[in-house]
Length: 439
Image (cartoon, rainbow, N blue to C red):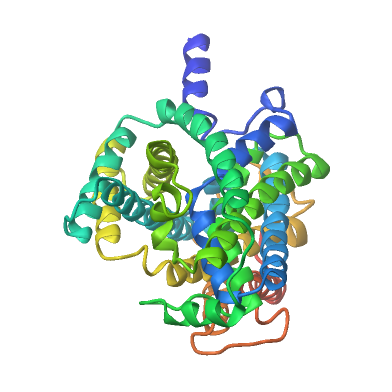
């Protein structure tokens, strides 16, 4: 009986339990995992958008520094919460938002991951279409590619995780060599900015603050849910900081590669297959085609698998059935052109997910650092209205300062990713102090 319970716990991966200290891993092991997560095609996309939008390398590097710093801070705070409590993000959400409030948060995270699946499926379709020179209807082909990419996730992602480790090093090598092969003959700043403004349907980011928020938005879901991985870490801030920093350095490198590609060629992010495969630019041909497909496919099944885990907290449906439903919905996102609207999607991610991390951080570090009830197994409340109010107001603050409709040019207010996170911390703290919860 005990052996059966132990095996069940391993299969569940402590999804509903504390991770015992005896099962914790070294920071190097966790850093390697995070680097694998950070090596994604979307980092190249964001780099191309930022490079063309800002037009000069100094501004590009400044935006990376701001955006990656925000992500490192969120990862360190949330990672320490995970390491200290041994809890996954959904369980932490139960304590901060209440059981019903956590459903809203789980849905937000699931929807963001479904959106990323749509982005990758659309790019997958463009890659195949470019390599084979087909002329299928791109919306329909994007939908069909999404359905194809969904199939392995129905059976789980353990097999594809191995492919991810194979694809990631090749991606780094190919892009690093590609930068030197293409050279550093950057187009004039005025030309790049003019192209950025002309991108349809959404113009590229044109300010350092907006670019920094785009960087943060690209990894905000991973940073906010970093407790899922760091719950396997020993509760040492310096270890978590080292792992997070190494991962974000790799992320910044991929962003820089994308920026240099765009600033050399004037090509938009949708044209990345042409840059990698076509003879006019890097000319990697079949090798580039295979690496692009593997990188997209393995990342996408991880996106879909994680979104289904979040949805299973809401809907009591068998995982494989939920995977099919979510996969069809995500493929529809691809068909409706989410890749072309990547900038708007990243803005929504930034303002929608960032405040969740702010409330977690406030709850643990400012309000409950010494309160053992936070890491106890006592049943959480049904709903924490103060957390939901702080989240809703912070979402509006982030949205209205993102250029929809207001634009600020004074740091930090022009970095709308920072605005939403900071406001959630401050508002939640004030509400908890004015209306304290009776224990």
